[in-house]
Image 1: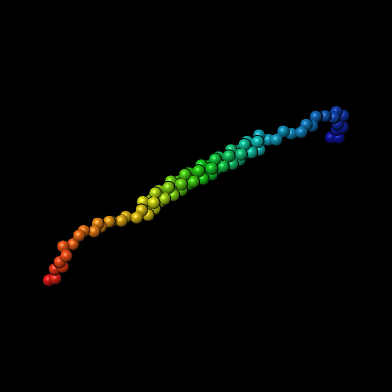
Image 2 (image 1 turned 90 degrees about the vertical axis):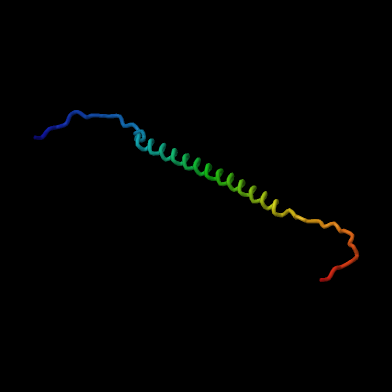
Length: 85
């Protein structure tokens, strides 16, 4: 059972490309980060818009309530006689 190996097998060793699963995983992570960023920007824009609308409504209501209403009585000439009862 002693066999001598006389032939040697040679193969070229090349740098292995990254596995497809790692590339795909990185792509998925980047996609989710971009989607989360877009969602954050949308929520922030919506919050700013609604806050501005609310502030404008409060300002308008405040301006309406701040108006001073005055009733003017014009003097009339009296008859000169005061009635006491």
